[in-house]
Image 1: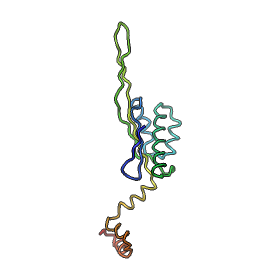
Image 2 (image 1 turned 30 degrees about the vertical axis):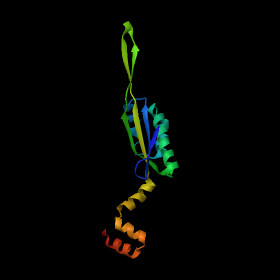
Image 3 (image 1 turned 90 degrees about the vertical axis):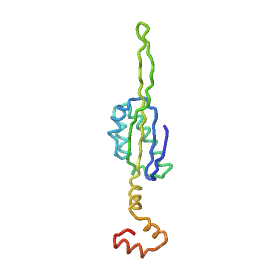
Image 4 (image 1 turned 30 degrees about the horizontal axis):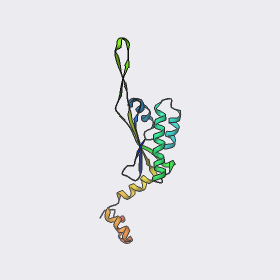
Length: 157
């Protein structure tokens, strides 16, 4: 499984490539877990009867391990912000049949991408994103009187 980090510091992802199953069969499981918390997702995947659940479980577990180890995320505040399944190349084989003929067999593959988001860090990020740049620079320089007056007026600089 290939692991990659996204650009924002509140998200972490994992990518499973060339998984030998149909994309539609994997999508049926992914649609059930999209937007849920990490713990709830693992519980759902553990008890679903589909073959795709094991592979998706490993990818979600890998993404969470990336976030916990590399970004110091809390496991209890992780949610699945993005989960997608794309079709990969089909493995094509020929099976011998009667009278010397060949019968084509196509084994579909898929790529699964899981993005986890730490909702506690996302709330802090949204606070900083709403502030104008001049206000953030004033905070860094220590102009607290200017900041208080701007906040009272509710007008950006």
